Amino acid sequence: MNRVKVLFFANLRALAGTREMEIVLPDNILVRDARQIIFQEVPQIASAMKSTLVAVNHEFAMEDDVIPPGAEIALFPPVSGGSTANDLTITLISVEALDLDHLQEQITTPETGAVCFFSGMVRGITKRDNPHQTEYLEYEAYPEMAESKMRQIAGEIRLRWPSIQGIVIVQRIGKLQPGTPTLVIGCSAAHRDTGVFDAARYGIDRLKEIVPVWKKEVGSDGEHWVEGHYIPKPED
Image 1 (tube, rainbow, N blue to C red):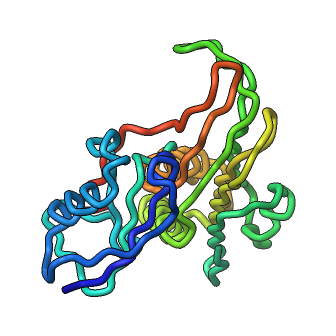
Image 2: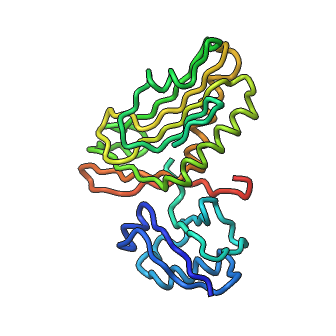
């Protein structure tokens, strides 16, 4: 038999009433079968079964993957949208305020002539789709996997835009008020026409797909976890 650790994030953690637990699974069990056992063990999360994603040892798991011995299994909804490497790549989950000047210094060289930043922030008033006011957002992450996926995104950017010199991807977590920056994605290059705009846009789009970060929105109409819709593919 295989004893594994199971982690719950975002709305699943709230439903389960715990962040982690240990269970025993049969040897060589597939992800789809392990998922069923976990939901039987924790029936209060059954309402979220259809939208739940699974990661095994910090990587997205497909239904036909085998659970290895002693694995760390994470269950979470589709994402709602650190380390410093020698190649000017910074990826970080942070509880600290974001300092754009400091981050820019870390991804520039004497040859840098252009830096493009995308900075997301907490929106206090939403007018389109479902108009409402937001009192604050509470961000949560699966840090080890999140930073790994951020590094993956940086690698994808470098393959698509070889002229990029530096990349920074930083996501804040915790309780954040309207007007507060929540994330920064920055790319530097020698010239502005070498892909910095497209690379930064690609970075935020991919982060919303594969980096396990979630947000709980709190407003006058109550609170709810915001879920995405992207289902990871094997290549993710």
